[in-house]
Length: 478
Ligand code: NAD
Image (cartoon, rainbow, N blue to C red):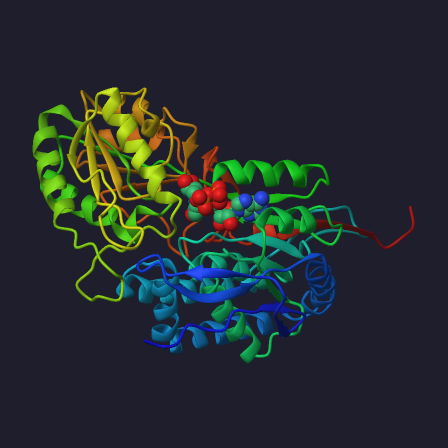
């Protein structure tokens, strides 16, 4: 194992610490692995000033030069895959092989957005002779970004990639529980020569940081990934200053399983995807609506595959699911399970925290869960799946849409008419048919309803980091 990195703030190109620190805990062992500096008002003001200066330089840097530098930093991340993965597993708990894939995915986000940096085309609008109307896309300005703890490297990477490719500077508040991914990211950019102030990294008390950065006139965009509740709070704060937001919030992904599909194959891939990152993924497949004709077969195969999950410390190569990333998630999951059983659900497997040190929770399958159970509306964000029977695709779509969320949704069917019904009827930003892949660098990702606003990735990914300026130019004064 590589040593866990020193935890510092990165402001205006300088690494610094503060008198107040907070612990970072390994969720598999509950051991303290580092102390994280807590930024106060002075550090946040310094970050705002640095971001303003950084923006003045970066917005005038040619897109091709920005792209080269971003690609170089992505190369550094790739070259440190093992070292960064060790840090991610230590602070977040996921198995090492997942952490290694996360590092590569983070690099891919940078590489994709670097490519987009040179394609932020404007347009020329037809006009009378002697007049030109030209639409320019300009970087919006310094971004205040907040990234969560479920993907310590690739979540910050998404926001930093979008901002930097568009020509913005950024102040990133990465998750206090999992700071090392963002530290490695800042180091990579420092090493390839990013101008000072373009990327600034702070940690501290989340509410103190957001209520300092968001009202500042320096901040021109608020980008957040996390819970709907916090997203709404930040959006309200931003709206008081007319500051736009990019919000990637919670999901509660439905999976529609037709009787016209390879039921066993669908059950096995779904079970494996469910336990990925211990279910702490906003696109995690959670509410399964299975045609009654194949319900028993699906449930049996799915629960058997879930039961084969080897839960353990992410550093153990035999583990394929680690602990929950933080202590507060354990009672939350337990409450959702107990409440569902009280409401009449059948517990098929799991349902309990594991009796060992660390924040481990058994992979859990609930069946026949009544609509009034809390888990039917509240995203469990853990290794918990609900498997309910339905009579047809229309009923499944109605059930899929019966939540305030609309991020990822999935369907398994071989029939074009059923797929057409799903494409037409499912309320989600991302619908995947016969695959559980919901988000790639080249595809736009984001939600509808309470799952958020805006898109990351794809050719849409830089839109929110840019603003439009129309220039009308008349040769003669008129
Ligand atoms: P939470 O709502 O307390 O925090 C979610 C994230 O927001 C954390 O990273 C936290 O540091 C940050 N945050 C909290 N208050 C903030 C504030 N005032 N200003 C700025 N940032 C703030 O929830 P939690 O217990 O950490 O996670 C549970 C829920 O969060 C899950 O149920 C899930 O819905 C959501 N979540 C979503 C994602 C995602 O990828 N969309 C990732 C992590 C968590």
